[in-house]
Amino acid sequence: MIDLDTYVQLLGLVQNSIIAGAVLGLVGGLVGVFVMQRDMAFAVHGISELSFAGAAAALLLGVNVVAGSLVGSLIAAVLIGLLGARARDRNSIIGVLMPAGLGLGILFLALYPGRSANKFSLLTGQIIAVDSPQLAWLVGISVVVLVALLLLWRPLTFDSLDPDVAAARGVPSRFVALAFMVLLGLIVAVSVQIIGALLVMALLVTPAAAALRVSASPVLVPVLASVFGLFSAVAGILLAIAGSLPISPYITTISFAIYVACRLIGRASRRGVRVAI
Amino acid sequence: MTAPAGPRAHEHPVRVLDGRVDDERRDGTDVLRLERASLGFGERTLWSGLDLAVKPGEFVAVLGPNGSGKTSLLKTVLGQQPLDSGRVLLEGAPVRRGDRRSGYIPQQKLVPPGTPLRARDLVALGVNGHRFGLPLPRRGERERVDELLASVGATSYADRPVGSLSGGEQQRLRVGQALADDPVLLLCDEPLLSLDLAHQRGVSELIDRRRREHDTAVLFVTHDINPILDKVDRILYLAGGRFREGTPDEVLHGDVLSGLYGSPVDVFRSHGRVVVVGVPEAETHAHDHHHPDEHPGIHA
Ligand SMILES: Nc1ncnc2c1ncn2[C@@H]1O[C@H](COP(=O)(O)OP(=O)(O)OP(=O)(O)O)[C@@H](O)[C@H]1O
Ligand SMILES: [Mg+2]
Image 1 (spheres, rainbow over the protein chains, first blue to last red):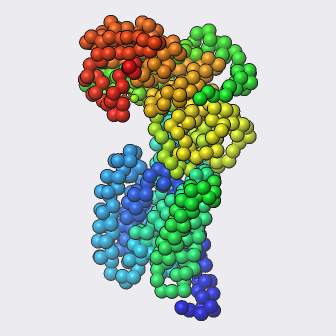
Image 2 (cartoon, protein in one colour):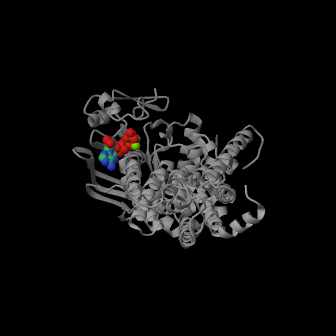
Image 3 (cartoon, helix red, strand yellow):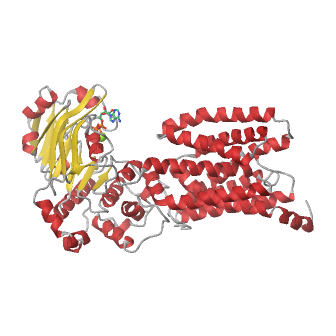
């Protein structure tokens, strides 16, 4: 453990990472609500592996890693969106894409001559979060996703519930579905930078899954999901500063603990103890 | 289970402003017209040369064995399935996708438990679910949703999560959702499937009352004619690539159905119910997904 002074100093250094983590946690929680409703947890995993391949390629070529990560993410998201309109098709496409992406990424890393600690941060997260110039990108992308998601909110809710009826009632369902995939691709690329490709679901699935355990309110679920995401990300980074471990195990453990707590609360409330709406 | 009275006709905003339109509708412009419509997939023709005109307030049942093209017919009317030939007109103009003048109640599927929507949110999606932009409520929307909930008898469970409601309760909400914009045409795909008798009666009465009070035309796909036998004006019967259209007495007739199926079929009536006997195996079992034992009109 380190003493308080050093900690406060470090805090100043990683201030930007904390901001990035907070924004990512919040937006990831919201996106997660739709990931759950559209039954897309597996797609999140698939996209993150291709995002990892993109980032690894960028590392090897010496170009911007965030950009590489974005390209990989978006290709995967759009492919899954176009080819996998139906759940069954979607799962097989993801099942095919995922090992291909992971394999490519590992190949690029193997060819990369740099230090191996950097390499594996793409898979399992950073020691502390990314450097400053990239942070601006991460926050910027997250904000774009947030705004777009709010504008899409109602048609996306309708389409997630019942695409046939939504289409009959004038929702452009193909556009809405594809737009959501693009937003998912963007936020996955951001998450890969902070928490690592293998652990992206801890911010894009777990918080929303936890919120859905304790509430069925269309207002409370997104609010709780983003609060859980934000808390996991920020608390994870604050704990990580003190030690020498990457931030991801802290984030994943906190978000998992929240999920377990929500399950217990949810069960208690179904037994009659009325905790949440 | 009976629903409380819905909004009275004279209270209805559209009616007050647009009484004229309603008169016009009554005067006989067809809400829906199919002209020489044909549809098939691959080698197989579902129906061809289909002519159908539905007037305001008319209740038309679509019957036929599994795979005869009933759902495809609704998809065509929704503008989601192009015809091979012929035309579909909604109030005189070709149908287009996402036209809010038709309300749609899909072949029933239950909302999974844990879906973060309450009963009122499901109905609200009919009012504003197509609108992009920040999801903030507009003035009057809540009242409209309350009104719709009341009109389908769902006020008592308006704030319960949809996923926790019974099939019949969910189906009432879907009716409410479909009625959000005062549709001129209501398309229902087996809305009574897997409901118990009380809910079958409740939901079909809801739809029947709607067309009486608001002149909404109804196209109602069903396997079993009996729950709605006293309500339908006409029947469109699809089978074996052919079709027959007419009043229940004209269509539910041994000779007519024998002609459609190309083999002897008998129709019996007893205690106000219709029983069809002798529907060829191939027709009923070729496409049985979830209702293998129901023949059209059969509930002996
Ligand atoms: N897009 C499509 N492409 C190919 N075939 C299709 C398509 N849509 C429907 N079909 C076929 O057309 C036939 C009629 O389907 P449809 O869903 O209209 O039947 P249905 O009368 O509603 O049957 P059910 O009573 O089982 O609901 C089926 O054999 C189906 O496989
Ligand atoms: Mg069907």
